[in-house]
Length: 225
Length: 225
Image (cartoon, rainbow over all chains, first blue to last red; front, top):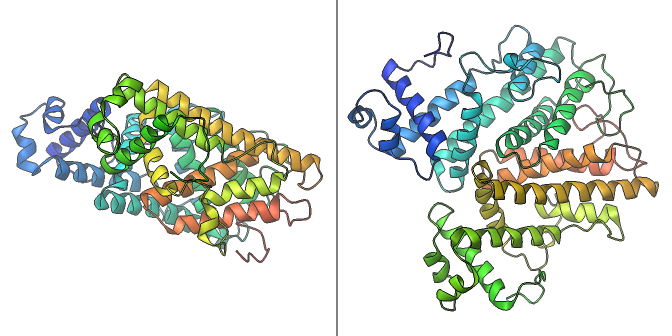
């Protein structure tokens, strides 16, 4: 276990089960997941899994709750420096061009790439399963609403110009989700650079009160990104 | 079969197999798909499926090629009116607020919602399968590059302001893909309205030479969307 890993309030056994589930999902994918192959990743008895969870579906919903708690820990609406908090959150998905990679991983989440692949696949289940739809909706709404709150705090502080904070948060999130999609599926790697340019144009030029307004595609600002 | 359906050059039997595959995928999902349940949706003998395709994987790749051909038919880089072509393409995913629904379905694609769900699920396979990654990459690149070409044609005609056409196409596509995601997973329906506002702000206010420049979140334009 990582010393600096995010504390989500799970017992040591529950945490070990969550780790085993992550590894089993990464290896086998959702379609081929079984309690048996989660047990293989678990260094205690497989029967302990049944003691904690009725069946695979219940275990997976507990895993989703764990993922939600981890995601909630990546952005705090009450952070001291709202702009820095937004940039830290954005940086987990899309670090600025010259930032070393080590800075872009949340503490204790060295398995970030693994998580992103697993979450991407689980999210597909929202098509068929109301529980998944609800939990993923909860997670997305928390992130978008928190970004919006942080934007509003910087507007009130006079550091950001007047804007529709909800709309800006939705735009930032659309670019971040498109980036995550590209990182995971690798269908069109060049889109990642376009999303990076778009996101940092908003953060550096559109949102700050002393920035150059406009939009990334039509602005004449020299984009040194 | 629809009289006005898009001709992708498939024989009548191939077309019937593609229809059966779409219906079987919609009913059973990727994980539980089998040649048997494609056969159930097919009004000729299941053995004919094996005559045309070696196995399920080969049939699914042929289905993906069919999906790509249908998608390519939704937007034409050589259309007479590039702005109208972009709006038609956008409207398939995100019709303007007051447009009747019937106009937002490509001819012969009454099954659009079904297709979108099926494509969303198949796309997850890009995580594990190089063939899927390549085919979905090809489809996305065609759409983004075609939107970019149409934007450039309107710039040359003096109807759009000077902009980075590739960047604008990537931004439009990020908003459209986020919308599709929301339509299919329904994790956060309110994001669809935010994406509609963002897309039509670009089309109506940012791109046209006589539009009000700025961005959707900070502009003071009265957004009558």
